[in-house]
Image (cartoon, rainbow, N blue to C red; front, side, top):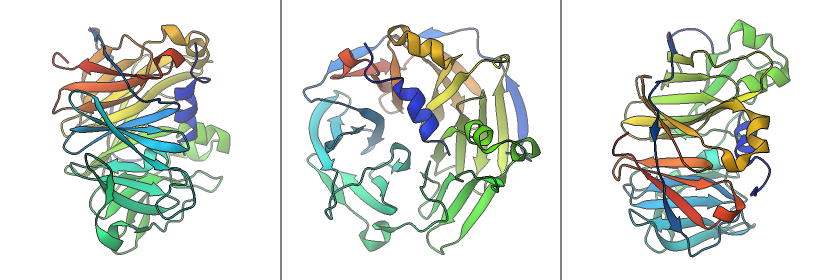
Length: 342
């Protein structure tokens, strides 16, 4: 039974909105596929519209973003997956949320940073509540030329990367914002074939999820409608473009990469590689795969999950992948996978 129509495809397309430089590397999927078996955690709290999972507090707290009016954030203690509390509500009050976009939340070892209504607020996720931290500098408006702001990822304490919202006149894929000096720079120029696309084609072609590594000063983009992964430095220079060989077939509307989870060592990303309609017709049988990349763009492994998982987050500390299912009967469950052999 569906939770709601093809949730992960809608998220992939709606959250989306390069030419020159870098090394292009065709890569074949590994023949070996590791089968991962879930441990199922029954939750004592309703989860109605799960959007994304996050880790904070040195990977000892798991935060689930739920698309509801009240109790937006559900907090669990790891590694036991023990429910702690819920926090946040939609509204117009000083402590309310309009509704945070799943891809404009950044986390660190001890912080949980939310961009909501173009205001950036940093929290510490404690055992009992969210506590704003950082003073006025960390809780202030974000002024950019892009509205709305999509795929807002932190590259350093003061620098963020986010999508260019594509128009007929757009010439770049990303913008960098330095909040200390207020400068904003367009980076990653579009290739000539991308510039010549119709707006609809270009928007679909550039639909992606991004993730960042503050220590390495790098960010990565994984594309939904073509089997491509790009790695950039913090100036927006393309370091490497990875394409999965043998995956594009004429006339097919496939979904490829969705929902990466970045750790200090690796990037784990969901790999679909199938026609969207085929998946939607039989959601119960859907079994996504996980590809593991290094931060140098090398494909290190391939695994398959045993449930129709729709969003993931990975803790290197606990060597565990956490996810939730898109099925209605799994609404009060979280799934965890031991990555010890992966």
